[in-house]
Structure formats: C-alpha cells, structure tokens
Length: 215
Image 1 (tube, rainbow, N blue to C red):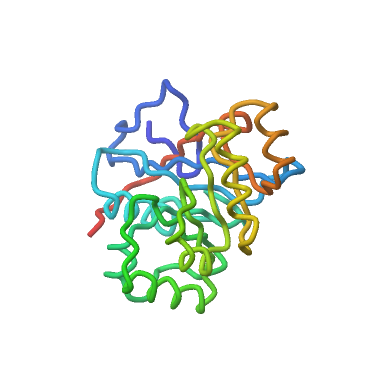
Image 2 (cartoon, rainbow, N blue to C red; image 1 turned 45 degrees about the vertical axis):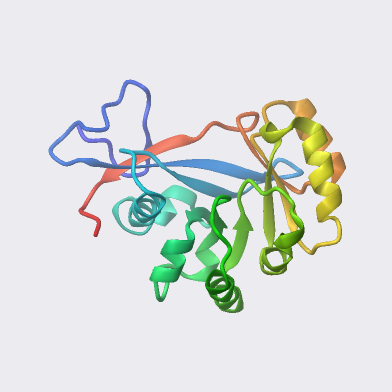
C-alpha cells in the first residue's frame, strides 16, 4: 500500500512500496525560547547525491509531490541551498514568505555569491548560515544573514558561549542546533540564543508522497 502524501512514515513502512516511488523528505521543528514551533527545516532523505540534487528534490517534494502546506502548514520552511544552485538559478520557485534559505557551511563565499545573496535579501528572502563558526572574513555574510545556526556538538557549551560573544555586535538571530537535553537548552537560552533545534525537542520525521521525475 502506498503511503499517502503528508503522512509520517514508521520504521515498518516501506518507502518503495506501491506502484510509484515515494518522494521522501524529513522535517524537523525549529522552536523559540518559549518552546513554540516557529518553522521547520526540510531535510533530504534518499539516495546519495550532490548538494544541488538533494536541494532540488527537497524543493520538488515541498512545492510539488507532497506540498508545502502538508509539510509545514503556515510556518516557513528552512531549505539548504548551495552557492551553485543560487548562482545557476534565476527566479527561485517559491516566494520569500515561504522559506528561509540556509546556506551550507562549506560553500566558498565569492563576490558573485555575495552579489546573489544581496539580490535575494533585497527581494525579501531570509538568509540563514548553517553550522556557522565565526571568522574575521565573515563580515559581508553577517551583514546579509538574518539567522546564524551554531552547532553545539562542534564544541559543547564553551563553543556556544564563544560564538555568542563574537556575534554580539551583529544584527542576527542566533539558533542553537543539535540540542540534546534540557541543560543544553537552558544554557544556550541564557547565552542569548533565541531559536533552537535538536533531538531534545524532536527527531526529524520523514514524510512520503508520490514522486515524479526531477530535472
């Protein structure tokens, strides 16, 4: 039996069951300091591929096969993007109000990329920096970004404290990611982190829908 679009899979479900392959994407909530869900990150689930292919499949599932409303309701969706995808794509296939563009941490920040990010920010898109680690050359990115995600697993609470201090002079919202227990949540909240994501709140939930070919 096929799994209907928008229905979370259990471990017993077979993603390949039925007459058509399934489009698989996982969602993980992002919460504020009061514990309210404010957004969802959409994560690729499928065969290994390049960052561009993974992002394309997430986009296709969110805006086609499954539907964004089925995945996130009225909340914005955080979607990972690469420099190549942003530079090779003209008009993005979703409105600024629907998404947060999450730039992956290993991207080379070229003048062309900065120009493209500035164009998107001027057009109303919100930019987040994934797995961010402060460096003196990051000033241009921080001027364009609205949200900075800091990975607590990269160095524990000391790392989170250091990054919070370095970001204090920048107009960004700090998001603590990969939070695994209440102690980490409370400590990061005291440091000034305003958004939170991690297994302490919820593990990613996989959602399936009919898959159509992606170019």
